[in-house]
Amino acid sequence: MGWNLDNSYARLPKSFYTIQNPTPVRAPELIIFNNDLAKGMGLDLDVLQGAEGVAVFAGNEIPDGASPLAQAYAGHQFGHFTMLGDGRAILLGEQFTPSGERVDIQLKGSGRTQYSRGGDGRATLGPMLREYIISEAMHGLNIPTTRSLAVVTTGEAVMRETQLPGAILTRVAVSHIRVGTFQYAAHFGSVDDLKALADYTIERHYPDIDKNNDRYLALLQAVIKQQADLISKWMLVGFIHGVMNTDNMTISGETIDYGPCAFMDVYNPETVFSSIDRQGRYAYGNQPYIGAWNLARFAETLLPLLHDDEKEAIKIAETEIATFPKQFRHNWLAGMRAKLGLFDENPQDEALIEGFLSLMQKYKADYTNTFLALTFNDIEKTCLYGHEDFMKWYEEWETRVNQQDKPKSDFQQLMRDSNPAIIPRNHRVEEALEAAVEKGDFSVMKKLLKVLSDPYAHTSEQVEYATLPTPSNQPYRTFCGT
Picture (cartoon, rainbow, N blue to C red):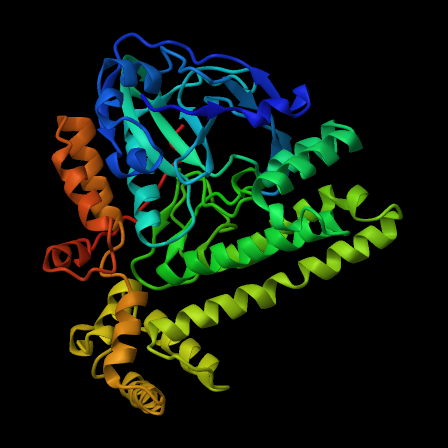
């Protein structure tokens, strides 16, 4: 099958995991398989789509070299600290790819573990397909993310509010080490355990800082930098994670956990989709602040490694966390300049950018399509067109763009490369999931995945997927998908 597995995580102290096999299922069936991802991982596409591969994706067979385990971690969920862990996921091991990368292979929905906290350890088809769609869309948007290799149905019903078809997702990640993993080490382990986790993380994700005299400080700095980059990319495409708990922030800087996430249509920083986020803690506009808050929790775990004197360690941590807003803002402004066709920097750019966003919010303009209309000089198609304040802004923008010492074709290409033609519109995702789950028709999802795979192509095929949903009095809501 092409597996080339190891499990270096199993060489950490045993308190970090529980050795456990997935729970076998009755009648697994392959629903979707990621050919491109599998090929890049050095896997045999034909064999994996046959009975042998399906048995592995279902957890019925353990591939050679695998060392299945469930990871322990903790975390702040909506600001409240609790013990967590992989309640329904099993890490099979780490695949060595032909390019020399090491990536986790995890089965999500593979049965109960000791971290299940009363749950059944299973997953249903709709949420697993949703994660497949959104994670692959994020990959197409060039945003660091876990990816989806396969989804199988189990042949068993899962009871939620009603009986639903069970499913298992095979998730691929650079790793599943989280801020919550470090919180677990700091709260429930020894300093030696914490040091072992930090050393392992440096070796696996940040080997360039391995010989640094202040290696744990360098680790903190590297994670802050990664998250400043990641969250700025979310904001630039209107992505709302929905559940930015500390156990859903990876040390590698990948987007993880696609439960209540969604993409914003009408621009509004207060947009919330998650049914459980009643206070708007994880609203679109709050994401940079929550990112900083989560990183502060990460820094707290490293205090014993930053300095022997706790007060001095706190000062070091606070100094580093204070750099996050500036790093985020720098990344976000650079991305916004690109979306507006600006190659160079001008002191007036921030006002120009904020002015455009304010107009979109004022007139309830669609975030993605408004940038797209600006890219292709189709502003007449936007709800902003004709308003005096927008037309004044448009003239200022044109003046600013034309001041650049570059041909018009260059800034137009920059905008095409920075403004996606398509995002996974919520109504399109729901359309695909309904066809798949209710009717057994997976063609709608596969067509959606195809156009999402290259969102900057700006093909005629993508145009229909840019259309807005029918207006509704009911706000769109997403759910954790447990």
